[in-house]
Image (cartoon, rainbow, N blue to C red; front, side, top):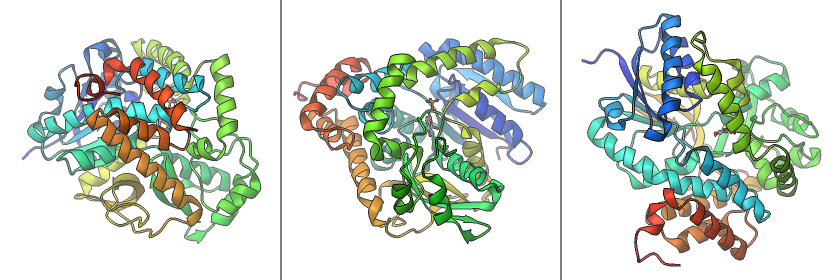
Length: 445
Ligand code: G6P
């Protein structure tokens, strides 16, 4: 029988990798990870080497028996892995920049997970994830796929519907970040706070919030209104203040991403303004990344640098490592993850992916039944699920009309005509990473 745990991290050259390594180091006593394989593509080789060497220094300094392997051969990484974590970005930051900037030209929020940007990131990513799933079937059929790649909900939906992999969990740092933010706002330790989350990735609501088992949802909703910084919004989103009367009556805790839907005009103005002054988020991240990689190169650095906290993915390692730990040890604690709905949320089809509180067992996350979503948020969540499903279909078929349908029904896109203009420009811009749209003659406009 195999002794230690083998982790394969696809997109291992990411600047987030030190987060993950730190998490495995901290939990090493309870989670015997012995090998971490960081895999990346040829274009990511330089980054892989820099971040991989930092990872090696980190485990050495911590004195833990984890071997760090760097490879450009994904299959070598996947072979006999117990957990496969995916954190890649197809087309890298250049593609993200296009996702964010092109829609802005048409007065539309691009975003890399929710709007037109999310559609395109999904269409670039899903075929690659499905390829990884096929490889996993042969090379590590018993492994769990822990997907962190955005749009995480859409990607999980695609794996559930279009692959043979059943052991898949989509993961986001959002719910952990929200719970910690609420705890701070309520001035209590985050361990005492429990939030019942339900919805979709980046479209999740905290339906009820409790401190030591006492419901505090009303107090939370009245505290959230009118604040300049609400403390629950990740660093990548402008934390514009909520209308107090609206948020109180909404009655459920929104995620930072809901601002794109409930504050569309203000967020658009903010994004246009940011783009003019500091560039889109991709450009801000590019600067941050180059600073980070400069630090990572420093041979005397052997811990995760503080500057990584400037990224939106805070608590990423906590989410990933605690999930892997609970699956491995059959811990049966409650975590918020993206899984097959299985009837837990009656507003969403059983076979679709939802982001929801689950009991984490050795045989996987078991979603806790919620029933219906409250009427005030149900329609939007269902609309986004329709968007995600049609986007998955477009990603797989490379069908132009299906992509146009997905683009048009996205609530951030104002009309079919604007949808078509954005779609056409983005298809051209991302051509290199969308072979499914360009390879076959049958797919015509
Ligand atoms: C949030 C989201 C993540 C996303 C990240 C982007 O935390 O939950 O899904 O990847 O922000 O952060 P970045 O620093 O890349 O803009």
